[in-house]
Length: 601
Image 1 (tube, rainbow, N blue to C red):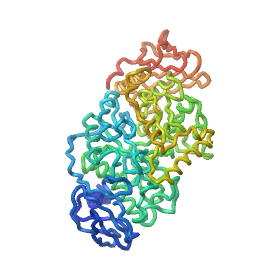
Image 2 (cartoon, rainbow, N blue to C red):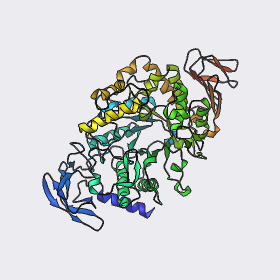
Image 3 (cartoon, rainbow, N blue to C red):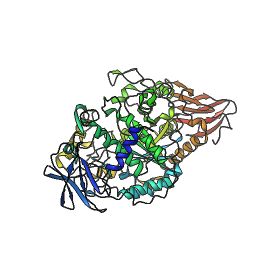
Image 4 (cartoon, rainbow, N blue to C red):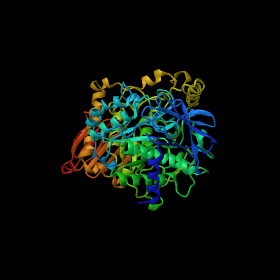
């Protein structure tokens, strides 16, 4: 056991969250005096030589408190476990031991064999709450999902938003429900056989309700990010800031029983320390695994195309379990839609898609026209199950001007091709809520900032951003409008109607196929034989005895198949197998098996 990691976890038990503690503590090196105010009554605090302030005070669940800094405040606790009145209100004492877990021997399925499902709690159901999501878990089980990935739930401003502007990282958003209700959602997922991954944001905090700077040097001018000053990971005071973030990660895994974390935009974690923050986090999570006997995963969202993310720490890597890889999405999306603006200018041919299948990264040191420089490094011996890929996710839909899904941009046939290439890929596939039935609703960018000036700046910034790409500003949904949020809510009644029901069955069949055929779960992506004919829009992929044949061209395509092969799945009624060849009409795909023994594994 790493002694430093063990110590870190011990410290967490002492200071994270002030949950029913008898001694309440807060790190506030920027204050000359600090008082703990409980239900309106102040209590003086004493400072130690590390700028931790403490006061002995017995409190009860439901008590409201905050900290008064140099006579200003009270401000919420940086480690608040609940903010019942939002980001600006008092913190509430929570009894973390009160919830009675029913899953006592739960272990998550391996990520390498997983099918992930990303969802936004506010729009996933009509209720838009932790408890409301439980009602739809049978749908996910029936679909064949193994891991549910929740978009961020940490307390953020207003009553609706994506969650990436959270400011109270230890407190579940009050609009979704209570801490116990979040635990109940995780508990019910586990009872249904579903692992749960939480999206966490450590690269920045939102602008409203962010009081951390009042307490200490949580941010540094030494580095900048798209959101302003960087989180302080390597400047004066950074040890406590790193401790704050690691404690937060461990809290979600230990106290809420999440099975893993998706780390947002780790390329924006600016850290020149000898030991990178991600390596520290990975080591501490491994210590927690040993202490709890449970398996956890850490998944990085990275724009760097750098295998260092997932290489072991012994090999100078960060030791994370997997990383999102956008190259697969960009290559496939640009082929299906012919879009070439923005980062899609680096893609657009079937050769790019073939490169994603063969190498993991399309850009592994090659020149990127979009960036104006070489980008990425070769994945080397990194296996496919270290990459999480998607044809749609919250970013790729929601960061479009009007939030269109793939089903809104291309033909039904091409949507089925996309699903097939995703779910038969050698990577870990991720679906975004509603993708499986071609939901008619968009997923748009929405906020509810209470500060009218800030809200106006967000709305105007959105219009200006997309007007530069030729969009009519009047057609761009206002993020601050409640209608933008409501338009993004899933309509579950669609499942029983065409064409949604048929597309849902297609996804179910593909996920079942992936589960039943070991060759489709094989992460050795370099064993995939990929053939392209860009001029005719033909793509074939052989993975063991399985052949995936796609026709993106305008004419009927003929693809050779092995003797004795059989059709397993076809997207179009005119697909046929005869004379040792598969015949495919335009915008169709077929999955063919040459080995009847390659069955349930």
